[in-house]
Length: 327
Image (cartoon, rainbow, N blue to C red; front, side):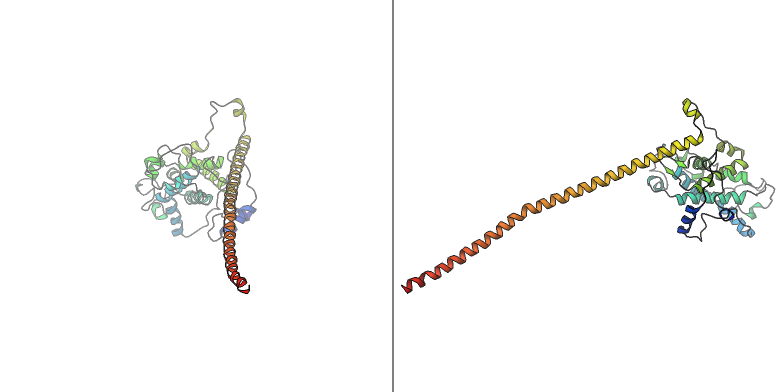
């Protein structure tokens, strides 16, 4: 409906609880043959604004630092976790070492890139004073662009924001050979994440990633090579070649469900073992207490008996002389 078309899952003035309620009641997004779900922008198109605000939109979405942080957010969530790399020399290594992942952070990355796509989709190469409309300030990926060159458009923005070499973008050799931003978005759109690293549960995030992939492919021919990548079947069995995309998704979903069940079973077994160990410890302590209790009881009885004997003896001593005196 029109209400859902204008809904922004990251709208700041709606609290988190209401966003969660909206996500639960939102109509299911349709499936797609190419992606996990049908492409749909994560947020609605930007409304018309004053020229100064339009400039801010471009300045923010082509800032090299913001784009670098956005890439790292995507990378730490859905990278190929089979690649084991030493993070001791990596700046901000804590993000990769910890097990905490946030779907909210992942959604913010998709949201920010969607805003960038909106901000640059109408940019024209014929704009002479393009810096006045944003995108050419200090820190921008287009700051070093000469005035003689054509104004940057959506094509250049896709190249700078989504196709940039991670090693250059992050200024770190650690990212050599890592997937670029568009490849990570495609994984999010097709697989929902990376098994063993993170899997997004919000289909709106997956649909938003798919929309960004389609946007990039429609504005940049180089990007279309990554988006429309055909899976190779070399070395695959005949059954694997015949497996449809839907069957593949069902198989993967079943495998993930089995893994979750195994993890829950292991957690339950661990809890039961901990409870048994605690009960054994309690029983041992009670046995020790009971073993000392009779000794203390006998000791007290002996003390009282000794006292009674002394008292009886004293009384006998006192009574003896009185009898002799009477006689």
